[in-house]
Image 1 (cartoon, rainbow, N blue to C red):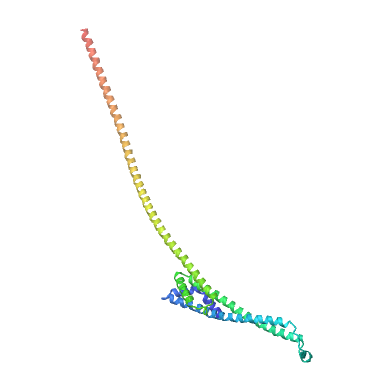
Image 2 (image 1 turned 60 degrees about the vertical axis):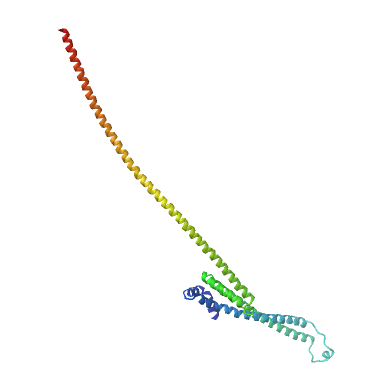
Length: 284
């Protein structure tokens, strides 16, 4: 049950981040959340350091047990008194006793190794869960990243080799390195967003200027179009006036022609009268 609750606490990073950054002092609260898993890791790390000595002792016992098995399989020469003593054990019985003792020693070594392996694998599992938890807290946002990195760097600097074994130290340092790379990536991303905003803003100004120019040109074209329509109307009126004048001119020409015809006819009549009068005067 305790293991289940611990795993649940390590997995609820999103809830922790939400609670932390909705508080008045997020850094203090987040460091408290980091303390429990880190102190747990130190406690288990101390156990692992103790186990190493036990492992070394177990290996020594294993070598002794192996030597005893080899010795047990070798028949020893019995002394004269042992050979004539009817109660003394035979060489086979002595060998069997030694083999049983060596077997017991080997079984005890195997049990110790199995127990140590179990503790070691549990430690590796815990180390994996805690480093995953620390990393997930760190990548939640930029603020949590900075807090987790500072916290872990401080803890690594203060923790001695007796408090934190090399494996745990390497894994924590790896988490710090990954979070710093995450910071670098986020920083580059933020800078890229700023540059893109500037570029978009600059392009927006250019687009606005072009839009204004296009609008001005459109207004100018509309004005020219209206002027052209007005001029076309004026030209049409002038054409109509010219046509009207042409019609008046034709009427005037017709009137002049009639007058000229009447005058010519009158002159012809007068000339004819003069000729007739002259003719009659000559007859007299």
